[in-house]
Image 1 (spheres, rainbow, N blue to C red):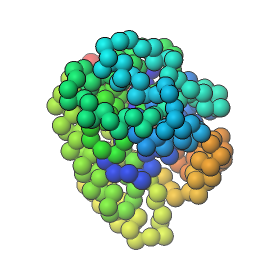
Image 2 (image 1 turned 90 degrees about the vertical axis):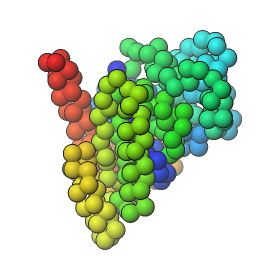
Image 3 (image 1 turned 180 degrees about the vertical axis):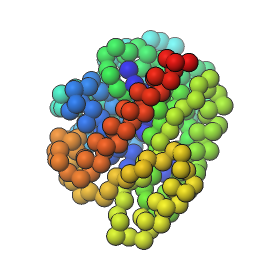
Image 4 (image 1 turned 90 degrees about the horizontal axis):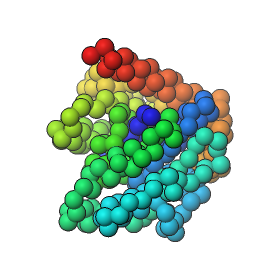
Length: 266
């Protein structure tokens, strides 16, 4: 089971779009996929027509059970999305209270890791959609994953969010025994604008070893797919945005394969 985290410490850069696009593609390719929403805003949860304000069983339930020192079956928190092979562990707005609670409790940094260990064998891929801030939720997501995907909107304000995200990653890696491969993915690219072209140039100059060599373009079909509550790959399989994410997915799978081979050789 591969676990990927999609994170950035800036909102509005395409994290949820990237999560649902990659997850939808994986399911359409025949993989069993679980999306995990740990953002208190619940954008991914809302995408599939569940209400983060009203939902009773959610990713928050995992942390609540840990705090109360009781066991919980993560499989009982999984919801259907209406797309075959694609399931959701949704978010609740109650997640916003965790950072206040976590300082008083032990073992809150590995809640997600333990829950996903309990689901091993049920899924081929798990994709985690993160909140845009450093806290116990992002720490959990980074601890649980084998690969980090950092969507970055191709505009200058987003570059600061990338800097903060990489600083956070450096801090978190000090507590990990293994390295965490990461990939910067330029999103919302519009070649007609100077801002997109220039910010992409800066990213490629500053992070040449970690940036994907292609881009995710601006595509209004993403918004239309969201309104329909469908993964973009189902809504418009031949759309330019979907085709770009398909190339990204192939790249990620190839990178995972190489990492596995290197690990076996070592």
